[in-house]
Image 1 (spheres, rainbow, N blue to C red):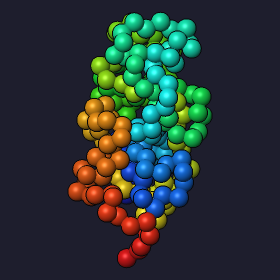
Image 2 (image 1 turned 30 degrees about the vertical axis):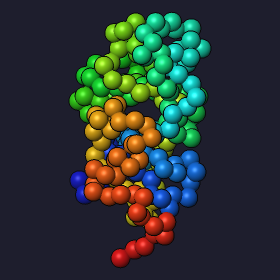
Image 3 (image 1 turned 90 degrees about the horizontal axis):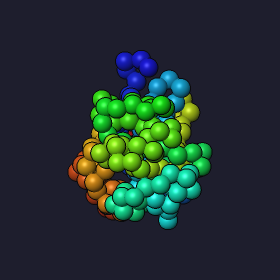
Image 4 (image 1 turned 135 degrees about the vertical axis):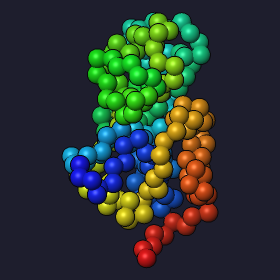
Length: 188
């Protein structure tokens, strides 16, 4: 990616109130990869009615920690809705890990699920089904059209903030109250 192009890796996309796509209405998505081929990310504030324990049970992985097994899985986006991803902290890599930063990664292999079930996985994680993708230039165009606000991600927003507070909370890091923004887009 050339030096003068904005790279949004490890940034959050905060859907503007005018977002016309129901897949992203009031969503917050982490950009995991952004280069000349486009962008790839996962939504981090759409809990499913499916727990980590239920999902691991479907994969015949036994988990005994009620705190972990009761955690809700998330809808990561409209693309590959059956594909599981684990967003996690730490510097460890599993079989299929995409490193986002030195301390943040996305893994899509079964070995991390086994480690989570056995209590030797990452300290913090989100289990998501599905992802989001943008073709080259598409995300930049959507940002110019006022579909998204962007801000750097933080571990607090990713792993600690309640899901229903993430849309407002992420925008607040920019000093923006998204509830006060109108739904009409304007250009200067």
